[in-house]
Length: 373
Ligand SMILES: NC(=O)c1ccc[n+]([C@@H]2O[C@H](COP(=O)([O-])OP(=O)(O)OC[C@H]3O[C@@H](n4cnc5c(N)ncnc54)[C@H](O)[C@@H]3O)[C@@H](O)[C@H]2O)c1
Ligand SMILES: [Zn+2]
Image 1 (cartoon, rainbow, N blue to C red):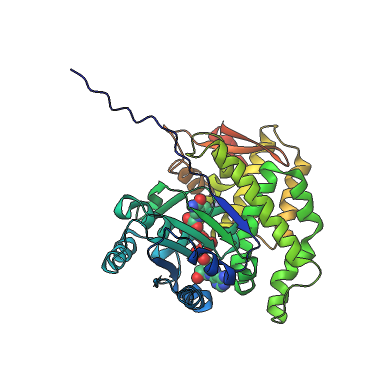
Image 2 (tube, helix red, strand yellow):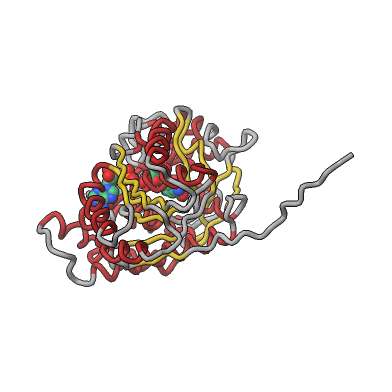
């Protein structure tokens, strides 16, 4: 005897990303949503101080029931323990199925609060308000939510889409330069794998794009010389590129692996540096190494490797593997990458600037040779 449970269905996970909105107007907009019982802002200690408390007041001024919960800033909060603590607080505050979680912060908060939303009461709605460059162009789009495990990053998580993403570029004015560069590494990655025109735009507009961070260091005035417009253009284009990939491959079965360019070697270098190198810095070094591998396989012209190297340096990102780092260990670690399958490391390589190929298995000796050059 057999019973078949037919759950074949089409679910609509569509949502909008609003770019160029002002944080101050978001509160008024979401306070009007009539199917929300309570609002829970989840944020980190830095973002709470900078934007969170004000955002809470703005929501409360619209006579809705709103709360704020913050966790210490940094990757160390992306754990099951923090998730547990957040769940306890939310349940004590009587969160229900029509409560709305607002993830206000960088990628750590988006991943953590999104995962809390995915499992609380079997899933409650959430929105993203990303406040770092990296989260605005990358982590807030695509629905991957997760926490880390001592055995590796993002090992426990889900695919869970937000109801909406609001991007306020002005929040970047307070971002530390190091975090700004982190985001730039992923932006350069998008251009290298998908968009030759964007790559040229980055080559030709560095002074405007850098003015954003430089002006913040010199004086607290807003950007000059079209910096804001360039930045909005950049963010818009990256969101568009990520949207295109996610729409074609929501659950990372194929095309989405294209985003892994620079990350196979990059992750290994990041962990071998004991996280002294930031993710963006490690990925920058990883992109150059993987471009060199592409060239060694005859896929990419040497002159394109030089172009990529120069662009990363233009944005003050490192491009060389630290001299004392053990090359053999880097290679070994690539085989432990979460994305390695059946003992095979599959690289995303470049064919030319703006075009990538996924799933290339590279002979170990070639990787070793390139890393030792
Ligand atoms: N889900 C995905 O698809 C995806 C993709 C890429 C990365 N990620 C995850 O994203 C995380 C990294 O995100 P991140 O780089 O945004 O780090 P983060 O969230 O830790 O933010 C970096 C730092 O900037 C501070 N900050 C945030 N916004 C600020 C602002 N406007 N002004 C001043 N300071 C601000 C934070 O408090 C923090 O100290 C990692 O955990 C990574 O795994 C997820
Ligand atoms: Zn990355």
